[in-house]
Amino acid sequence: MRFAPQQTRTYLVTAVTAQRRSLFQVAATAELLELTILDYRSQGRFLLHAFVIMPDHFHALLTPAPDVSLEKAMQFIKGGFSFRMKSKLDVWMRSFNESQIMTKDKFMNCVLYIEQNPVRRGLVSTPEAYPFSSAARGPLDPMPLHMQG
Image (cartoon, rainbow, N blue to C red):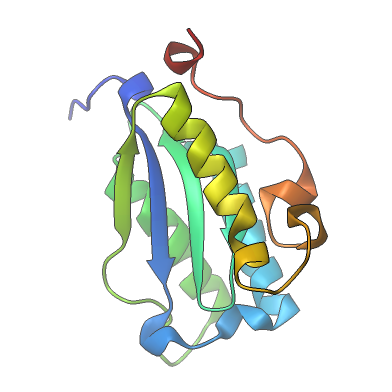
C-alpha cells in the first residue's frame, strides 16, 4: 500500500472518550495513555510533535511513519490503550477528528493550541504545570523538515 509522502502527512488529531467520561482525570489512567502514545512513538509508528491528555480527550500533533496510515496510527493509540486498560466499557468514541497541517505557521499554532489547552480549561496557570502534556515533558520530535524552510 502506498501513502502520500510522509512530509505531507502531519496531522492534528483529537480523540474523545465514550460518553465524554473524564477517564483521564485519574492520574494513573492519564499516565497509561501517555505511556501507550510514547511506546508507539518509540516503536517508530509515528513522530510525535506535541500532545496533551485532557480529562475526557487528547490532542496530538503527529506524523505517521511512511508505512503507517493515520487511521492505523490512531488505532495503535486508541486500541493499544483500551487493551492495556482492560476496560469492560467502551473507552473511546468511534471516530477521531483530524486536520492536516501543511505549513510552519499552522504547525506552530497547533503546538500552542495543544499545550495551552489545560490553561484555557482553567486546570493550570502555565502549560508546563500540566503533567500530561508535551509542554511539561520537553521537546519531542521536531517539526518536519519541509515545513522548516
